[in-house]
Amino acid sequence: MKATLSYPYVGERFPELTGKKVVVKDIAELADIPYILLKNRMNMKARRTLSLKSVWISDADLEPKKRSYRTRSVTKEDEMQKLSNEFLRKPLL
Image (tube, rainbow, N blue to C red; front, side, top):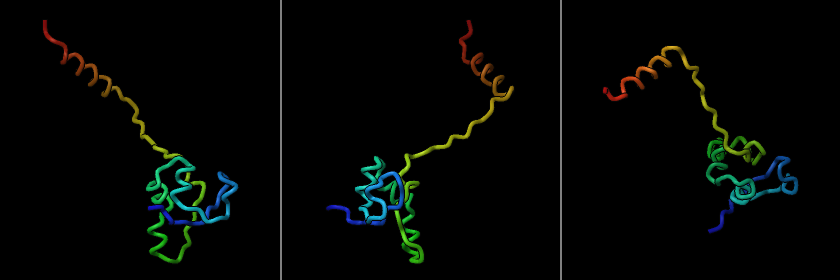
């Protein structure tokens, strides 16, 4: 069954599609992201249930997935714990 859910595309990434109604699955394939991920990014369900806001596809929705990682600084205690763990794991002679 072919997906028929379509919304207007507003963006610069695909200039030939700007301002036209585009099938969500087709533009997801063009942008090389999963269809479900695009639906979630567009926040379609929330916008449609409010029925006050219109739904559209933007360039921000088509960006590759970004993950942010929290980095933790290593303290002296962490270094000491690592050394003690290594020492305790060594077999006794």
